[in-house]
Amino acid sequence: MGQLAAGIAHEINNPMAYVRSNLSMLRGEWETVRKRLGGNDAASGPVTDCEELIDECLEGVERTISIVKDIREFSHAGGGAFAPADVNLLVEKALRMASGQRSNRLRVVQHLGPLPRLRCSAGSLEQVFLNLLVNAFDAVGREGDIEVVTRCEGAFISVRIIDGGVGIPAEDLGRLFDPFFTTKEAGQGTGLGLFVSYEIVKLHGGEIVATSVLGEGSSFEVRLPLATAGEDPA
Image 1 (tube, rainbow, N blue to C red):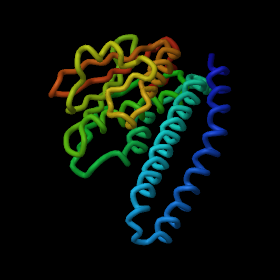
Image 2 (image 1 turned 135 degrees about the horizontal axis):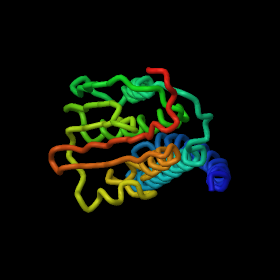
Image 3 (image 1 turned 120 degrees about the horizontal axis):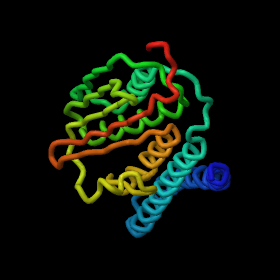
């Protein structure tokens, strides 16, 4: 399945790169046409229409490329070598990478408890935490709080990302991890981020548990079994 996904992604990505390049060049040439026409009122309408069509095509191409990127990530899910890793460090790295999504008025509170080292694909889990953090930032917007909590619960490592955002309707909770399902506005999400994250966690023998209250926020908990954890403490 992974090889098929990778092959499809590759076959789509190459022609999309040509289409994006050509559309960008066409957009630039169209700007030149507009300048040469000057204040010709009779031509201004069709020129504007063509510009809008080109822009819509570019948006479609960018969305396709974004979907291909997520498919490629799915094809490599769990593909990295498994080795003992510090989950807290993976969370901190994901936070640094996601920091570009933050506004100055958005506060992240970290409660990172002591954890045993976990035998895992570190890069894949880091991608999971990054996806969940970016979603949390999007849910909160430009002002609010996000809480990140890690702890050891019996035979599991738990990583919870809690946001004070708008919340998710109850009827959508059961579909969050379906491929191509998204609660974001059209063009804002591919609907593959949570699907890929769920598949990665499942390959580690774990699960992602989502809970939400409309108007209050959401919680996404990644539960990873310690069956393959190393004995040395983090």
